[in-house]
Length: 151
Image 1 (cartoon, rainbow, N blue to C red):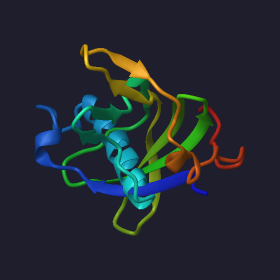
Image 2: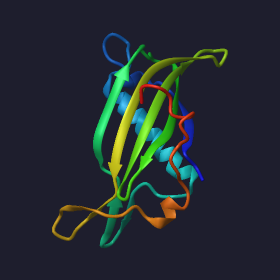
Image 3: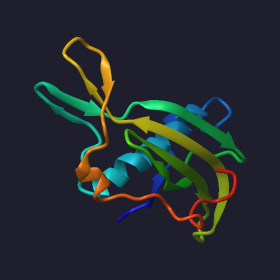
């Protein structure tokens, strides 16, 4: 059963601001890249779209604390850990690190996202649903030693 996942991403020029720094909003995108890659590694769809069956994981909480900048050309390592699994939601902890040319890492940000499994109803509303068994059979909460302090 999986409880953590790590991926990397090269910083694109379009992700930076006038000062050459990654715009803060992109850190949330990096966390979502890790979540998508995590689901793909489990051979599961993050969003399911079929006639009369649109389900996904909207965010109910998202936060990020920045400790160092990222710039164009940097490589960011994104570590995802499952902090909590509830009946209808998943709490993720994220740690982002800048990788240097030698592969050494330095912390740049930490984040947290809570998602709730929902279905789009015929009247256009979102209705929370229990997490699917196919997902619950493949994931578990991370052990304490994986969850880093300050989560």
